[in-house]
Every structure is written in C-alpha cells, then in structure tokens.
Amino acid sequence: MASAHSSTTHITPSIMKRMFIAGGKMLEVNKAQVDALNVFPVPDGDTGTNMSLTMMSAVKEINAVNGTSMSELAEKLSKGALRGARGNSGVILSQILKGFSNIIAQKDECDARTFAKGLREGAELAYRAVSKPKEGTILTVVRSMAEEAVDVAKRNTDIKTLLDATVQKGEETLAKTPDMLDVLKRAGVVDSGGYGLITLFKGIIMGYLDQEVTGAEEYDSTDSPAKPQTIDSAFPDDNDLIVDYESLGQLDFGYCTEFFITNIKKRTTVTDIDKLREYLNEIGNSVICIGDLNLVKVHVHTNNPGKALSKALTLGELDKVKIENMMEQNRQLRARYEAERKPIGLLAVCSGDGFAAIFKDLLVDQVIEGGQTMNPSADDIASAAKKINAENIIILPNNKNIILSAEQSRTLVQNRNIFVLQTKDIPQGLAAVLNFSPDASLSENLENMTAAFSCVDAGQVTYAVRDTVIDKIAIKKDDIIGLDKGAIVTSGSDVEAVTTKLIEGMLTEDKEVVTLYYGQDVTEESAEAFVSKLEDKHPDIEFILHYGGQPLYYYVLSVE
Image (tube, rainbow, N blue to C red; front, side, top):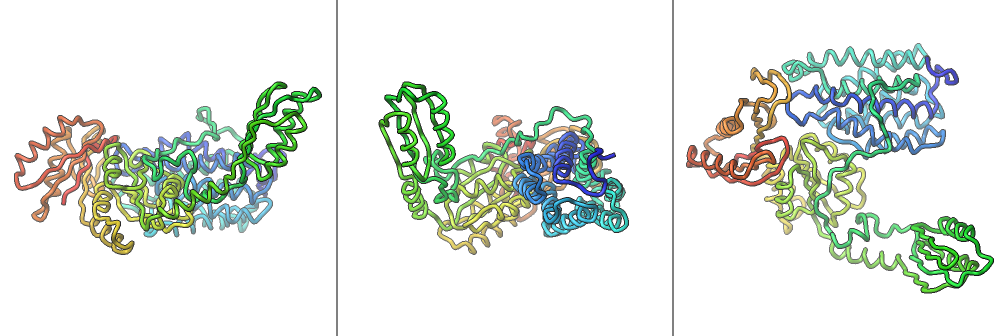
C-alpha cells in the first residue's frame, strides 16, 4: 500500500518526485540488462546506458526542487531530461517526460486521469520526435501503455491500480515486439527501449509505494554523468573569460570591486567581518571576504561598489581600492566576437583521438568526443555549438544514434541557425567536411556535403558480445564481425580475414579507393603490413591508411 499519510487517488509533488527518483534508480541498476537486448551483438549496445544517463540528468534537476509546486517539479523533470538526452532512446524518453510534464504542471496534485493524460501526451510527443516512427519499438510500448492508462482512468481513480495496469499492458506489448519488427525476431530479443521504459515504470511504482529499489548499489543522484570531452575550442585564449558566445552581454553584476580593509577599528569584531561577507553576498556575487582583525581582503562583483565600500568603512580604513567596469570589458569582447563572426561553422562528433585530430586538421571548429561507446547529450552538443562564433552551424553526428540528440540540441541554442547533416558514420562525416568550402554559400555547402557523404560506403570491423543469428549468419560470442552500412555481412575468428572479406564484398567496378582507419587495439606495424597484403591482392585499388584511435572497432573503412 502507499504510505499511510498519502492519498490513494492523488499524487502530491513530493510523492511524484520520489516516484521519478526511484524510477531513475531502477533504470540505473538494470541498465546492463537493457543494453544486452540490443539487436546487433556489437559491444556498443547502449540503450540502457543512454536511457539511464537521460534519467539521471532529470533526477539531478528534480532533486534540487525543495518546494511543493507540481509546476516547478514538472519543469525541472522536463528540462533535466532534455539536457541529458543521449542517443535515440534517450531523446525519445525525454519527449515522453516532456509531454507528461506539460500535463501534470497544470495541477496542484495529480489524479489518475491527469497521469493517464500526461502519459498519452508523452507518447504523442515521442512519435513526433522521430521522422519515421517504427512499430515494435519503445514508441509502440509507450503508446499502448498510454491507451491502457486512459482507459483504466475512465472507470478507476486508484493510482496503484492505474500504474499496475499500465505496466502490465506495457509488458504484454513488449512481448509482441518481435512479431512487429522482423529484426527483433531474427535476433531473438524484445525491443530494448521498450524494456527500458517498463523498467523505469517499475521503479516509479516502487517510489509510489515508498519501497526501496532492490539490488541497487549506493546511488547518489547528485552525481552527474561524465560529460564527453570537447576537444578544441574556437577561442582558446578566452576560455577563462567566457563560457560561450551567448553569455556575452548577460552580466548580472557590472563592477569588479577589490580592496583591503586596514587599520581596523578597535570596536570591530570577527562577527562584523562575517556580517560584511553576508552583506556582500546580498548585493553581489563572486564574494571573497577573508582575513582577521589586522587585515581583510575583499573581492565582489556588484552593481553598487559604493555600498560595498561604505559598509567596509564601518570596520576600518580602505586601501588599494580597484573598481573595474566589467560591462565595458564585455562590450569590447562582444565587439571583437561580432567582428570575427563567420558565416558557417562546423561541429563534428567522433570517437578516437586519431579521428579527432583529422577533423581538427580539416578546420572543424568543435570536435566532441563521443560515438559508439558514449553518445553525447543534446546539452553537450549545444554547449559545443555555443562556442562556435558563426551565424550558421553545421553539425555532423557521424553516428545514427546521435542524430536525434543533434536535432534536439537546436532547441537549446539561441542566436544561431543549426543544421544537422544525417551522417551515420565517421567516413561519411569526413567526406562531408572534405567537400565544405568557406567561400561557398550555406545552401551550396549543404547540397555539396550531402551529395558527398551520400556516396560513401562505410564498413566496420568489431567483435560480437553474444551468440546470435543475423540474416542467416550464425555468430558466436567474441567472433570478429564485419558490418557494411550497419548490417552484419561477414564473421570469423581473424580480424584481417574478416576485414578482407568485408572490403571485397564492398568493392564494385566503379570503386577505386579504400581508406582504412585502424583503432586503438591495432598497432601501426600490423595495420601497415595488412595494407601491403591488400595492395598485393588488389593492385588496381588505391589503399590509404590512417590512425583513427577508435575503441572497440579494429577497423573503420570507406570504399569510394
């Protein structure tokens, strides 16, 4: 039963907060099980991880809510999920939570009908977030759960009854996903995103009942997940002055005020110094007020330097007073940035220090570390975009699981036009960048870059993390597998043999160049020796070798 003091027909903001914290905890504890359901047996199956990180971001936001306002809780839940949204599954989850939040924000307490209506709104927003929705996925599961919730809420006001029926319907629908999506049936798994959603809801029920999520390790929801590193900066010299271009001109306090208090009056006490510090925090920020009854050092950003000085004079004499107009500094910086603003900037996502170096050599403005093993969030991508001093920014996600997050980042960036090219792998991203011209117009660049990456056939060589059968290919755990445009086409026990077979399958009469990027688990010597063998075997083809440094994938390659 729900705790004795709570209603069985209404959810208060504090209980709603508890429900979503427990849901996030449940997802975190079970993320490995969700990851394991990914269709392809590749080592970067990360649906559970992405959903968990998205939820952790939401939990971090709602943890900061101390009041009893449902609208504030809803806003934080939605905002946190959006900022933390990673991968397709994370973006879809963020939209479910956004729709749900939109509805519950309108009420002081949430009854069964409001909860059901919120879930329906979330399902509708999630469908709209995907350009080509597929049935048999998390979308189908959330829609069926929402329909069931609406139906149950029409004839029942009990929250526990509603939640149980909703999860039961979700589990029934999840079990049918292999019949809706052939790729699931062939892999012998249910949809991982749908499973993740039901896992979240099981935690939500436990939160409602005020039960501890079992099997959990020590969980600190104030810890934010490690952010993918941003490699490179448009203006490295200004990193200590400014976070991003949008923050220019948005100063809360205009004057940097510094001074010492000397010859302190006999009646002044240590408590007076403490009171001065409290006063400075009331009229400004970035406060430093340290010292003793011999000397006090003061630093404050404020709009009223005179007030700070007057208050300090009650303690003693002032010395070495320095007041700087930060607004003027800010105007000068803004003028410089405006003067240096260019028409088009580029942002690329990639995994591997070799790939990052190649993108930087090609003058990409910002390179975010991320890809197969860690999908950057919408907020990570937006933060990097804000550092680019350009009117238009072209984003190259270079991974099909990052495209939605990149699209989502648009809503987090003001004063810029964001364009996301649908590059699904790094060779496509490199082809697009090679066809970028700073002298061409935006429309010409978008057209030329799209045409260039659309012609690239990309392959990848990695290993299987479990036994499965894909398109009649029987695969054992730890087998080496070759992927052509994301589909497994060959497998074996030897990296070079599988890579050779993959390349030969991709070569057609009109192909002339094969570019190979070797990963962090391949030595330069073995990669060079391998390419020599390929050149001997295919003398009419040009082979080019680069260091990619990518984890998990022995080789990434393109055939053109």
